[in-house]
Length: 380
Image (cartoon, rainbow, N blue to C red; front, side, top):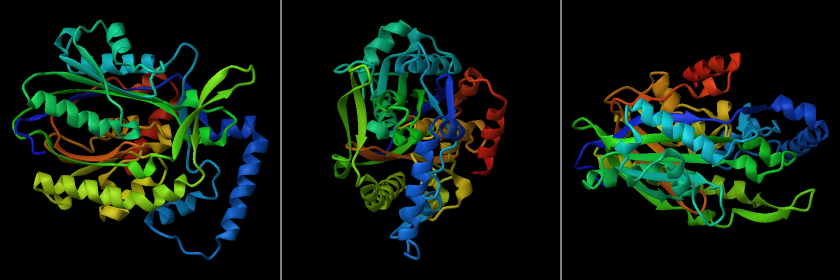
């Protein structure tokens, strides 16, 4: 898809819940669980001693196998009174404010919530009600690959001439679907982001897209109703035991197919791309991507140390901080890539416009160490 009108992101904002968890929290509150995980990892490493890594994904993962937290440093989880809707509302309001737009200027709302608050209904209409929007409110679901898909959709709608300003809101609230004493919960986090998609200057905005389905991941993640300690049914996320092997096997092919396809459709080369944005669901995924695409690590960013895995919101977090740190500037060529289980893998190539940023998301989570963490991303 080659853009015939200059359309792209005009503003970006992020939103995070109030509670921060670090690995020290789990060491203090679940020492036996952490010790068991460390012993299990040690046994696994000893059994694999002197065995070469099978592929690029495994080789990048290898340094993290001795760490029970797999490189997780910090994560955010919902506090009392917080929900996916409260995160979406804050991000959406900040994105509109940054773009200097009112709710009356929004022609369409597209929301990707992983997962929405209500079974059977997405968050779009509920968010529109909270914001006082009168426009259409659409739900979009591509699991953790929702952000580049939503961007492509919004740009195409504005290019069609039927809409001018499309507000896209993406959230992920994993903490609702894991028990705190589940070791999987150590890697999953909560957060939201929003972007306004509008006409830009000539030659700016989205240039191309390449998307393929991820049906090979259809059976790897699933949800079950599980009784809690009080006997109440809770929706819990389950991960198949062989998931990591499947992701290891298919990640390089998906990455190459989408990124090479998007670059070719845009009529540029990887050397001409100024900056790369990958969703970073693991601590090593950015390094894996740079190795596969043979690009310098200085041409991407990894916010996993700040947020852990926030699903589809990762792409927006990486975009926001890359722009905040001056790694992306107006008229730079930017490639973004994201993928999700049982949905799609997608790459977009765009020429960055004059993108307004919402307020620093960490102002809502005051702590002295945050600014240091953000600045450390400049060397990632």
